[in-house]
Amino acid sequence: MMPKKFVLFILIIALTVISVMFFYYFQKRSPLLSPVADDIKKIIQKPLDKYTFGLLRKKVFTPTPIKIEKTLSETSQTQTWICRSKRVQKRYRYTAYCG
Image (cartoon, rainbow, N blue to C red):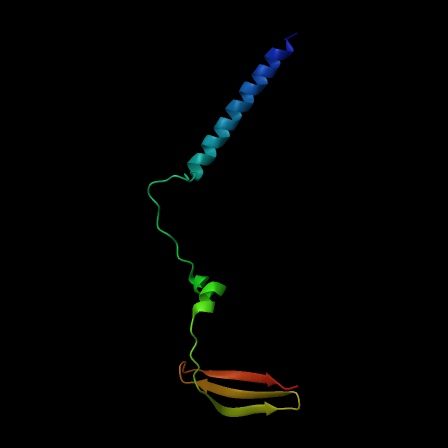
């Protein structure tokens, strides 16, 4: 029978070899990023970053007149209109809740 120290030594060597092979396999698929890299690749712009609270707080919004073209419906609780803005030449449906 083999001594316990020898079995433990073989087990440690086997685990080390398996972990090195596992690390090498995944390193080839997607290399790790170095925290002290000299060259930084292209920074990806996120299109929705302009809508963060900090940037929206700094933005100055200018009011524009809105023209109500047509009243669609009017009840005791809601009013619905077709509106147009000068800045954006689109028609909008707007519902106001009264009360």
